[in-house]
Length: 257
Image (cartoon, rainbow, N blue to C red; front, side, top):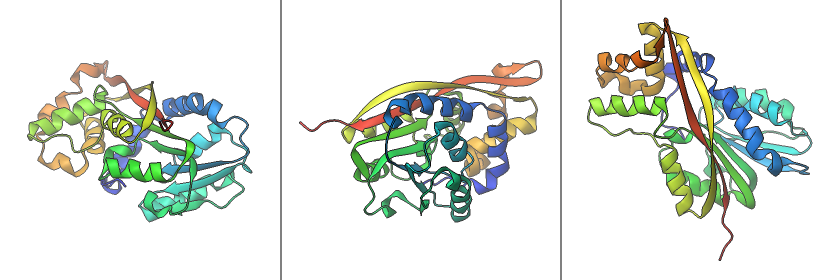
C-alpha cells in the first residue's frame, strides 16, 4: 500500500482537491466505463483499493447508484482511522457489512468482480506484487479500474523537474508503469482520458501547497525557486489555471490460449 504519508500534507491535499475538478472528472469517467459491466447484475463484489477516508469513494458510489442489496463492498487502506471513516461514509450504499482490509493480501478467500483504485498506485512499494495480488483475488470475468496520471500530466511534469534538480528519478509509478505490468500479467487494457482543471489564486503560499502535496517530505532537499517558477506559464490575471488529464485504465484478463 502507499508509502507516501498523507498525514503531514492533509491540508495541502485538501487544497488541491478543493481547487481541482479531478474527482468530478474521474467519477464521470468511471460511470461511462463501468456502465455496461454493472448493468443488471444480481451481485457485485467490489474492492476499493486505497480508499483513504472515503471522501472520493462515497461520491463515486452515489454516482454509480448500485442497488444496495446487490453491492458487497470491501475497503483497503493501511491508515486505520481513515479506513474507519471510509467504512462509515460508505455503509449506506450496501445492505451488507462493509469489509475492511489493511492490504489486499489480507483478502485470503475473496474473489472480487471489480477492483477499483483511484490515484493510489503511484505510491505502492511494489507495483508488480500489488497487481499480482489483485489478479489473485479477481474473478475470471472481473475488471480492474484504475485512474492514474501519465508522463504528460502537468503534475507529473512538476515531479520530474523537481527530482531532476536533485539528480533523482521520480520515486513513484505512473500510468506507463501500470500498463506495462498489466500486460506482463496477462491483462487486456482499455485506456481513456479524464481531463480536469486545477485553478487557484496565485500566491507563493498557494504554489507551496501544491508542491507540498506533490513532493511530501522530498520537498526538503529540492531548490524551491526553480519549482515555484514552474507555475509561471499557467498564470492568468492573478490565477493559476492548469488544464491537464489522467489516464483511466479498464483491464480484464485475456482468455487463456
